[in-house]
Amino acid sequence: MTYEESLTQLEQIVRKMESGEYSIDQLAEQLKTAQQLIAQCKEKLYKTDTEIKKILEKS
Image 1: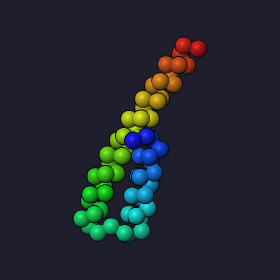
Image 2: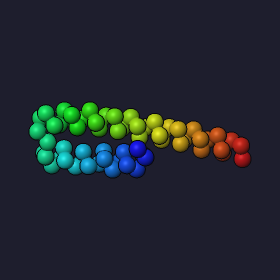
Image 3: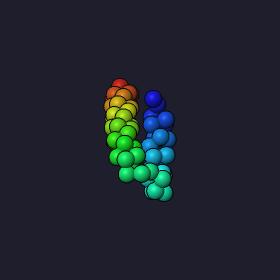
Image 4: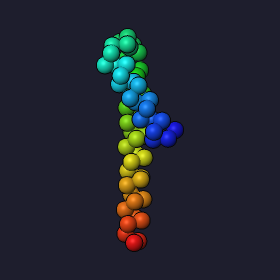
């Protein structure tokens, strides 16, 4: 899953949470999914940041 796909899915979950569309059971499940998506996004951002720093150091 790309960063953009993860972010889009996370935004959808947040919108549904804010609008109260989830039952308590669904909310718990979606919170777990959101945590996983956040971790994926953080990891991708960290890797990209590291790659950019390496490129800039070579310049």
